[in-house]
Image (cartoon, rainbow, N blue to C red; front, top):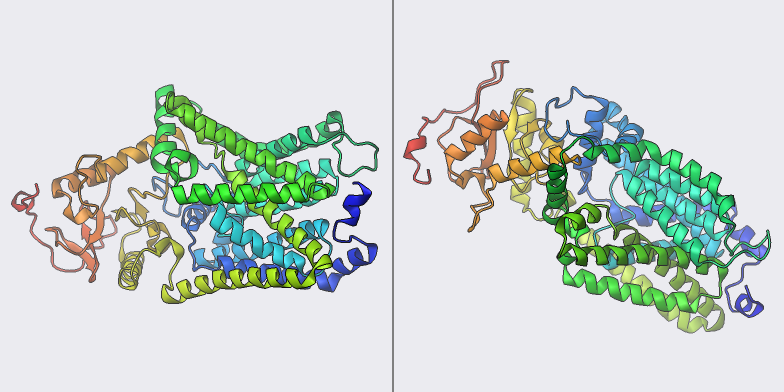
Length: 554
C-alpha cells in the first residue's frame, strides 16, 4: 500500500487494534450483531425453507418417521447438513430445532462477521453498522433470492465458513481461506464451491507478492495446492451425493428433470429471464454503487483483495447470464448448466462488499468532516429503523410464519386446526392429498402426503415423478383448472388417490364433496378418499353417499 493510501485510510493503529479486540468489547459487539440478525430473521418457525430442510433432516435421523413419504424418501442432496444438524430433531420438536439452529447460526455469523469487519476497519461498534448494512443491501439488492441471514438450513452454516474465510483472506492467509471454504462446501457444495471459484478468480486478478511479508499480493499457485487438496477432500461428502443425483438415470430423464427444475419450479432462482424486472434493476443499481465504492477504496489492500473476490462472483453471475441467453437456442444444454445457481454468490457478496466499503468510507469521512458523516450516519440509521420497524409491524399484524404470509388469520388458524386434528386422530399409515398452495403439512400434521409444490426432490427420477404428480392434481391445460382441489372432477381425484395410494383428501370446505367426512372447519375439509388404514380408525362425521355420477363437473 502506498504511503498516500495509508494516510488516506482510517487509522489501523496498534492501540485501535487492541481496543477493537478487547475480549469484553468483542463479546458485546458480537451480541449486538447477533441481535441485529435476530431482529431481521426472527420469523415464526417454520421459515420458508425450514419445513423442507428440517423435515428431511428428521427423516434422515429417524427413517421410520413418515416412512414411505415420496419427498422424504427421495435422495438426500444435503446429507452432510442432515447429518450435522438433524440430531436436534431427535431431542426436541421441529420448531425448537429450528430456533436452536437459528440461534447457533446467527451467533456464529455474528462472530465471523465481526472478525471480518474488524480486519477491514478496527474501530469499536462499526462492525455492528456494517452488519446492518449487509442485511439491508442483501434484502433489497438481491437478484435471485439468495440471503446470508435467515432460517436454519445448510447455506446459513456454510456462510459462517465463508465469512471466516474472507477474514483470513484479507489478512493474506490464502491457504487458511481455501481450507475454510472447503468447510463451507462440506455443508453446502454450491455455496462453498462457487466461493472457491471466486477466490481463484481473485487470485488471478491479484498482483504477485513482492515479499514473503506482503499480505495483499497473491502467493505462488504451487503453495496453494495443499490447501486446495484439503478443500476438495472436505467437499467430497457433499459433492459425491450431489453428483450421484443423476447417476444411472437415462439421458432423457435427466434432461427432462433439468428442464422442470430450472424452467418450471426454480426459475426465480436460476433463470434470469424469469427474474422480476424490479429485482434486476435494484441489483444492477447495487452493482453500480459497489463499483463506485470499489474504485474509491482501491488503495486499501485489504478492501481491494475483498473487492477482487466480489468481482469474481460478479463474473460467475455474468457467465450465468450468458448461459441463459444461449438457453434460448439450446434449452437442454442451458438447463443442464443453469441448475447450478450461477447468481447465488453475487447475491451474497455484492451486498457484503458494498456494506464494508461504504462503512469504511464513512469512517474516513468521519475523520475529515465529522458533521457531514454524522448526517449520513443518521440517515443510514433511519433507513435501518424503517426496515426493522416494517418487519415488526408485519410480524405483529400477521403473527404466523413467513411461508404463510399470503394467508389471512382465518385461513392460517383453520389450516393449523386441520393439521392438529390429523396429527392427533389420523392413522399413522394414512397418505394425504393436500391443497396445492400449502407447504407445511409434514411440519404440522406429521403425516405423509402425495405432493407438495415446495418440496421438489433433487434426484432426476424423482423430479420427473414429482412433476407427474403435479400434472395429475393440477393438469397443465388451457384454460387452467381451478386451483382448488374441491372443484376438480371427483373421478380425477379418485384416480390420483388410487395411483398414489392416498387414503385422505384435504381441500377447501366449499363446495362440499360427496365423500365420507373425516374432519372439517369453516375453511378446510378432510375426506376419506381411499382405503381406511389397518388400525381401524374410522372417519368422524356422517358419511356421504358415493355419488360420482351425480356431479355435473364429471
